[in-house]
Image (cartoon, rainbow, N blue to C red):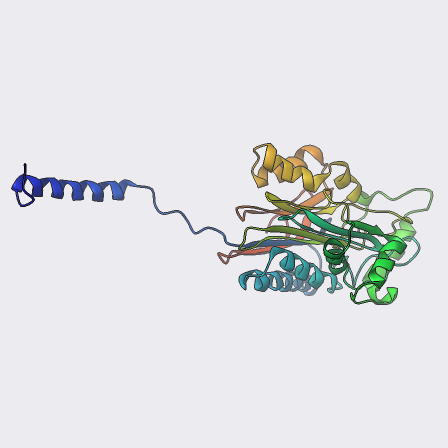
Length: 345
């Protein structure tokens, strides 16, 4: 037996220490800091001219940044993803630059009809509404539908009656009026006729003439995902038209894998059940979140039809479109922030 003080034992100890140091030096570096929470938002995608005046451009950048900070505060303080997406979308609904809430586009009849949806990925509960005319913040009513009713989706007069039973803030329909949207409506009337429904891809302006929608997706510190979307719909839309936004799985979807919000030509987004398809590709197809979004934009949708924001269970964020631009922003717990409008920025 070798005693602890024996020279051979001491040599073995030294050799062991040196080996450990060598292996430590050769090992992989420590993992990068993981994302604890993340948020992305959009304010609509479409043909957004880069020739817009700098003063207008800065208003959009400022509006997007303010909305991003609204969600950041919620998540940084430990709030839920559901709270974050609701507050972000409320902020965008109250900003007349975007086609949701104040600043919503006009229907063919010359009024405003609003759609919204919200979904909690941790429970798969959802709430949606279409055809609202007097609810100041449709996204908040959608959350009430989700949490306090036995149903998911209310429309038109029924949606208004449901609102009557809640405490959500109500306004007259002309609250949503802005001169810019009125002028767009007039231009649309001059370029189209009731006998020839307009093609959304043929009309554009620096304010995303056709493709206005707002949305947000988030993951919180508990790993819960949520998505919310809100819109005034399509300029000059016909009576009773419903787009992709309030249809769970098309324009809005969240589960334990991903949260997705879409913007663009609603009919095309609906045909592909786009938001749910992205989540399914990640969960069942082995796609990364970015690969799933790319597949929809490049293989299932045509150019100039849509944009998506999405976040997955690892906090990865994707904001992509096949249109010239999409108002968008993101932030995560690592302090990584983006505020962009066009593809190349």
